[in-house]
Length: 82
Ligand SMILES: [Zn+2]
Image 1: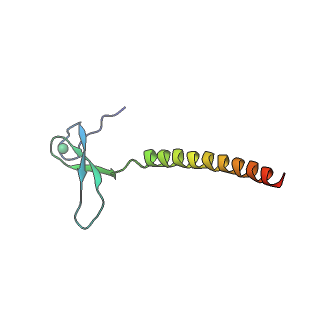
Image 2: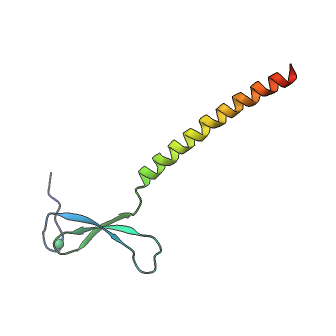
Image 3: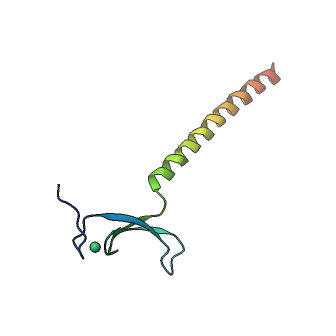
């Protein structure tokens, strides 16, 4: 596998840096050279995969609670009718 190199200074190590660009209200992450600071990439500040996974867990919990409520409501209706 080829080593990643900075296109400006040939350094081989990079770091993530949090930035708030002007005219932009969200933070983003720059991937930059640890030696000269040349920016070679950018990423969202929040890890979208993690956020989606957290939302899925919350939705799963809500779905389970709704199923419990549906079951209890059905049982209550049955008792009322009998
Ligand atoms: Zn560099």
